[in-house]
Image 1: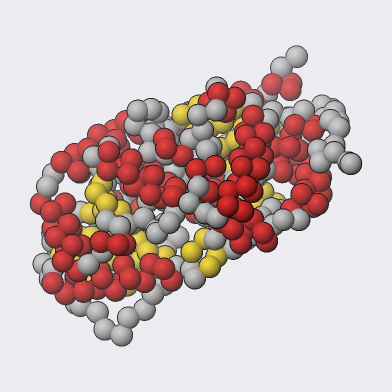
Image 2: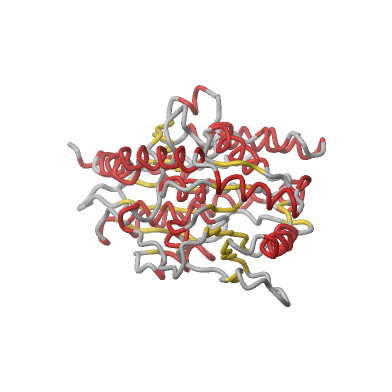
Length: 395
């Protein structure tokens, strides 16, 4: 049987200059935002970013050097939700094309003259870097995987154990694992991190990686000093119940202004509601907000905490990572949580009013913002990457 990973080849060092290659997934908002946050600290000739789909388009629109990559995995949904079982079955032949994915990454490494590789959400670049002997760093807010399969069928559990083994191999093949989050015990993604020693010993907590500094963000201008609630929903169909509930809550709370960022539409809305659609950067709205209502995605959590904003989180149903993040945000005192099972007009209205009237959540969030500023995650990441990018030329 042919080995999945070819024998190591030696990287040519002729005329190399330090250059960092980021290979990132496009499955989710966080990967591209972290890549942009990292890239802002480097000159264009010092860095190149590889991705596909939405992330590639976003990076290209930022004017950053980029190359297009093939998609590694096809994520499958069912009734508007991510379906682990169908995703595993759909990608059962993934191993057959994996060698080609590795070769694609090696081609980019050689063409770009990369001296260090950063992988965020992709497996093939880690194996490619291992093959050519290139320093490699993984950026992730999720290094534990098997718990994500525990609530699924026996078939998925079996595949999940194999997937967990692959992920441990992936993570232990990197020189370091950068966790873009606050250091323990303040880490939001703590329940999503591996307790395997081979993984833990490689982890470095660098702090939030967001593509701007707090001081750079100007809040949107408002004509009133009324309480202002920002709600982010995107367009996933399974969030429609929250959208409909928010519209009814706004009818009751006429003294509060609501901006809803979503692709959903409504026939009629209360005068204190604005449907904003989807915007490239929401930070200015966050900074002006009295309260944020959102899911518990990791990158969103890092952005709101960097700005010192508290939140009411409504994690997507059966999305274990979000459920874990939501629980941690509540434990850190910067958020409260409502699940879809308890979602009602009265519950949501009462919770919004309670959080607006209480200062404890915003005070805790402000404390986290000051810590984020002291840590300066992008600077921490830059120091690590510059170190590894020069190691092949050190002597």
